[in-house]
Length: 608
Image 1 (spheres, rainbow, N blue to C red):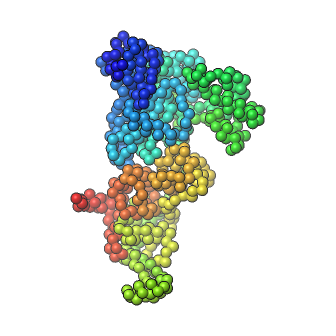
Image 2 (cartoon, helix red, strand yellow; image 1 turned 90 degrees about the vertical axis):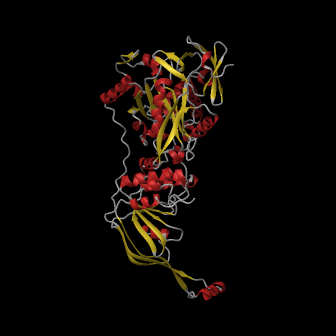
Image 3 (tube, rainbow, N blue to C red; image 1 turned 30 degrees about the vertical axis):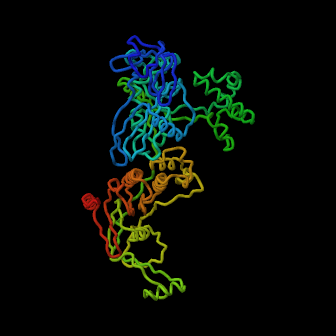
């Protein structure tokens, strides 16, 4: 066996007779008995004729060449939490990449397997702060039917050797290979909200232009249909055009399943006989579900209902109907050549398709004046429990019998203007928590205060604090019962995973908990956000990522942010505070601008 040698293929071409997966690679057995090792998801299969040129291996299709070897590999740089990291987008050809791809796949909210040809690209990083695989995208064969796509393509079009005057049933059957589809896009859960999804869409388009083929055609269009795009506009940011919602099947699901039940062969035909046709496999699953529903006397209700409204399906039936009911979903299309993209853009304008209106949270009114603190003195009055041991301590150290005082802060003054970010730092016991609690109105301690604390009259304080854990996140967030607001807050906070919506707060990782707390504040109308021990339990990368997200929303909503932190190296550059308060002891404190502090911090002596 010749493994991976291009010279086994002649210029005239060699036909692939069999393909055998082998871990992160697969072996294509040629018609002359020799074998070529390929990346696991290289887009070739039985019957394809591979040829050799000066660049490597390719497959000839009706509208050009499709590159097979060398594998896809592109180096680029991505921004994560204010830092730039080199990454590589590539085919999977190593065992570690395949394992990471599978682990991330477990996080996807849809578990069913696709059909037709499939390619998979991963974003791989080598920096020690990052996971090995940041995310992946799968590109598969397009579905035969998609109503919004049909509307857009149903006009005269030509690009090179491919063209049509109308997009009707004949074109659908013979030219669907011109459509490649993004079937899955998964980003590492700790890195969502950093633009990696947009990068994956753009790389899927680059790959599909020269690396994908189906039905003897190289694609001219890339399609994406996903509910998530209602709330996370990564498709538009990658240059895709919204072309409408799929039809769904609510209006006909009962009649469809009644028809499938009459097609008894679907329930008796061996799965192996249906393996080559994904639509037939889906119909078999639907028919099996229809038989189960019929046995529960629920199918007749769907059929007689006519409209197929989902309200007749109670929560007890939901798991039975899951996978059969299909709600309308947003569809996006991108032309993979200049001619194809101009065509899509012109057709969208001609048809008057309007982009999905993204949810806009209610604006937050900034505080109307600075938070003013002048000559503040804070003292704890501590009572003493009367015991023989406490008596001995008091006698030895001269402490009054009934209580004693502990000075926390003395002669402290500062003004915090609206819409600014303030960092309070200092060693443990320096008064950070006491000061922040006082500003947040959350001090229940026996605290004596002298001096002035003047809060603006329109202050509404929100704290970064844990959420109730008796209900899923999606049930906690969303003012006035608005699910759109809940999903918006969770997504922009970096919790853009359907499975996370259904988790309770105590089931989240530390990084996810901070994002959930941020989501709660985004969902509120608070104009002062206070966080003590800010990000102190997170690793450096997650802390910087979460801080970047928080600051982005603080600036956008003109919120006043105060954070207390004993350590801040990981996120200082991202936080970029306007004001820094340094607390050393009750009588030692310093207030400086963020710019002065950054300069001082950058030139501080380093420990050997």
